[in-house]
Length: 262
Image (tube, rainbow, N blue to C red; front, side, top):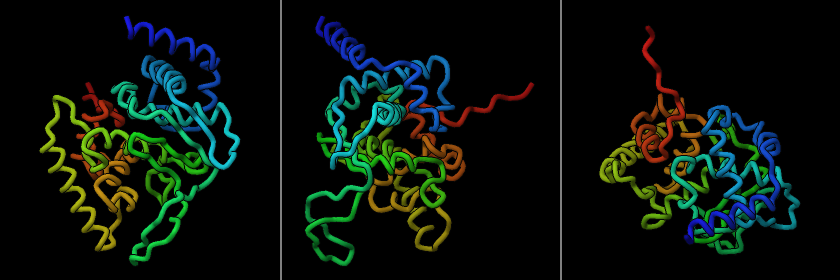
């Protein structure tokens, strides 16, 4: 009874927002990842996007004037990772704050040399535990398979991956496992990949993902997630076991499984 009432009220909010399929298609037309989602999956993603917008509160930072099209694009990017998980995975937070460019958090910051500064460097995105999702629109527009010095980048997917990670024991690179997954296997495979890439980085060998992922286990999971969706072929080729686990976790197969020729 309560769930039906909630669904009815949500449908009313969606109708009040007034978004159309044509508006949604226009908003996401320049994101190549959307070519992967067709037919029933595309319809499901559009419906989830509208529900995301009905459930969350969007606000601007520093008086940035964002548009409905921007909100549709950000919401779609946020929904792609949970397309087969469900919006309940995002129920612990409500607010999305959008700045035009990089934003500077109003808190102390310790630099690599140990010096504490009153404020840190400008950020492109941030996810607070049970708090808002904060994004730079400029960074959203820089998404792509080779957007960050030839590496995959998607600030929305990166930050919502942190939100998923936080659902289990805080941001530590180990989100909640599905019943058919083994946390021990996750730890073993991600640790092995982390160690190998750390060695590659120290030896100045090419990396298959953004080196920022090597700063902590939480960042490693977030960077792996944006690579999984933006450059899945690269991940499958260079990090096949991590790719396999992310397929299990996100319940998606971004690289089509080849079928035997007859």
